[in-house]
Figure 1 (cartoon, rainbow, N blue to C red):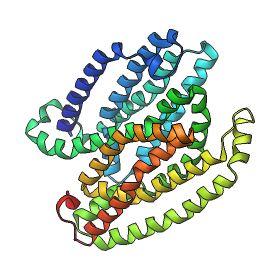
Figure 2 (figure 1 turned 180 degrees about the horizontal axis):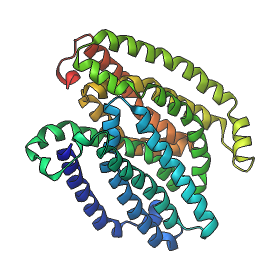
Figure 3 (figure 1 turned 30 degrees about the vertical axis):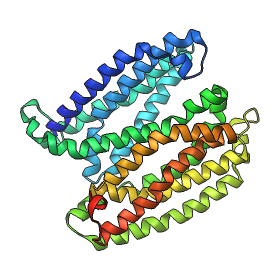
Figure 4 (figure 1 turned 180 degrees about the vertical axis):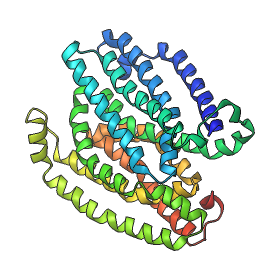
Length: 353
């Protein structure tokens, strides 16, 4: 644990230095398609958001330990408290200040960092005192083993972040910031299904790791069978949500913002694929056989932007989510195949890496 904290801190400091050097040369007003006079404020905001994002990478290790201890509810509770804390800070800001992006960035970035820092101190001085990181326990001889798997997970996280976070930027550039609103309304509406599904199955990641280490394959097969069956009612739920989407949008945001039914359909298909692939991804992550997933994520992140831009030019905003969906399709085929190969002990070569 001490070595992991040390290595990750060194990596994050390096990334922060690079971003701090590059950021002054990035014109965020052009990138985000906003008025030129906002360039300076957006540059400061980008630095603030990136700093807190990097800090979370290090501090979130406490959540990883809790999940590894098969207590995912506590880890998820951190996210809930962090969201509530951010909401409270924003509420206070609305009553005490004028609208300011810098204050908003600080509120959204600082709240989870403070929570994770307090949580780390709490757990490392109590329940996980035995595992508390210390400089005297840092051994860089462990770096190769830690970085081998850890770096691949890090690259996957970055690739997924790029894959799922560039849609708003593409829409802003092609159609203007105002079109981001209906897209995000549809996105958040359907993402509720994935949030609920993830909460239900979150304990299985560490459970699969434990069972796979003990070669308790019958337990894994039975659990995966139940998880795959669980996806079916969520598919029907999403279909139902498509049919009532206009009704929900009207009572949620009023009539001023129109979300096309075609966008809801494309968004529903996207979340169906996400839910379908999640149990298989949990298994792959739990076993550490993530080489194929790494390749899929990196390639997906690279091709997502050109595909989404191309489809958006012909289909409009819905073409952006269609582009992201297309990037997920190879994984929805290959990752289940890898699961069946590993569980039946037929995985060789890249399928077992």
